[in-house]
Amino acid sequence: MIRRSALAALVALTIGGAAACTDSGQADEGFGPGAAGIGDPYFPTYGNGGYDVKDYALVLRYDPGSDRLEGTATITATATQNLSRFNLDFRGPEVSAVTVDGAAAAEQKREADELVVTPAAGLRKDSTFTTVVTYGGVPQPITSPELGTGGWLATPTGAIALGQPESASSWYPVNDHPRDKATFALEMTVPNGTSALSNGAPGEKTEKDGWTTWRWRESAPMASYLSTVVIGDFRVTTGSHQGKPIVTAVDNTLAKDSNADKAMARTGEVADFLATQFGPYPFDAYGGVVVVDNRIRYALETQSRPVYSDSFFSSSTSEWVVAHELAHQWFGDSVSIGAWRDIWLNEGFATYAEWLWAEHDEGVPVRTSFDRAYETIRWEDPTFDPGTSGLFGNSVYIRGGLTVHALREEVGDDSFFRILKEWTAQKRNANATTEEFIALAERISGKPLREFLMAWLTSKTPPPKPGD
Ligand SMILES: [Zn+2]
Image 1 (tube, rainbow, N blue to C red):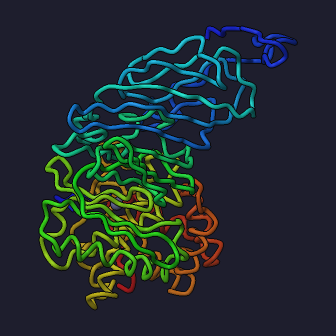
Image 2 (tube, rainbow, N blue to C red):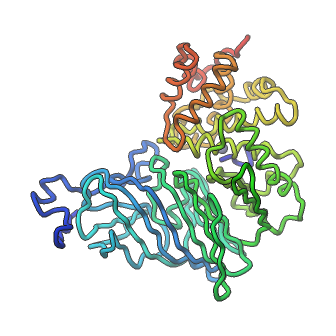
Image 3 (tube, helix red, strand yellow):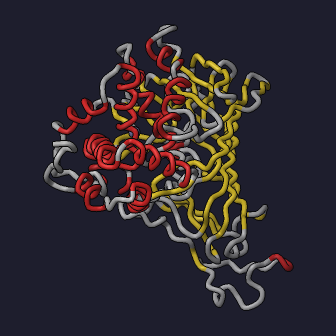
């Protein structure tokens, strides 16, 4: 992301031989409820324990006239323990039915921002199970005094679902934490003439009785905050880039051939440049969506198709924001954090990509960007483990970029770019930590770097500039 301003009760029903609790009994086998949070120290209720989602398949209909969203979410998951009951994060509209493996849930109830499901039979560890949630109503945004407004936002012509660190739970039931990445498919039915843009490759678009169904499939595992849907009146451009689909869209209230259109048209070029720095582009589609909405004053790296506020495109040299969000396709989207305290692994590299792009496109040396940024930092604020209030602060972004460049000067270009490319290859579609990054940098460079990097990430006084 970048902001514009800155920058059981176990129900032991036994049905034939399929029951999980016939032999020694579920209690003996340690069946129990999954945790209500995945274990992130910053956000104890985010995500859930007891299972690992493989795929979300959403079949939804949205009526911009009534703001009503309705349909089903099919969630395929594997139990990571003997599970008597599990939670999904869900702040969306009313749930009318829940089934697990085709059988109606013994109980489903809403508790705060969670949907708590007790399946008719316990779920054995390592078994794959499918949950279908049917729901409908008017979704609401997620508002946090510290983190702003995100989630489902109704607009005059549609809706935008967007936000970090949470947004997905406002419109579908989800294990809402980047530690549980899953593939994602969306079928969104909207009135004819309205666009519905989402992640991944486009599928067949069909029309029936005045409604159009748009289909999207993200085939690489995705952190839930990177899922999006943008519904409304858009200029949609569809093409092919590097043999993959590229879909960009610009709000139709912006003049044709606006700066936003021109920046979106450079999406493939920016991605190709970043691939020379970071390794192969990690996903099977490209794109971007420009929205006009005064509640969204940021851009977010939603997977394969970032969403940008139009406010970034007031000048003709705004591709830096495209470089930032596309860099996240490697750093954040393909290689995802497993805990929010590591967010500099996303934002530090995305900031660094802005500097690389400025050098490539405008001839501003990276070292010049580094020297300028070095003067702006409040060194009291740490980059690693910044706390929830520092999650989107300058230290995460700019000091993160400084750290990346300091590493480059310390180990030299050859080792540096090998570290980046090996990192994005080894951790592709996975989760990563700061510790793992340091270990890889040490291995490839052959240098002890822990103290050096931790000083750049956490020292309260400025580390000496390289070469000084
Ligand atoms: Zn960012």
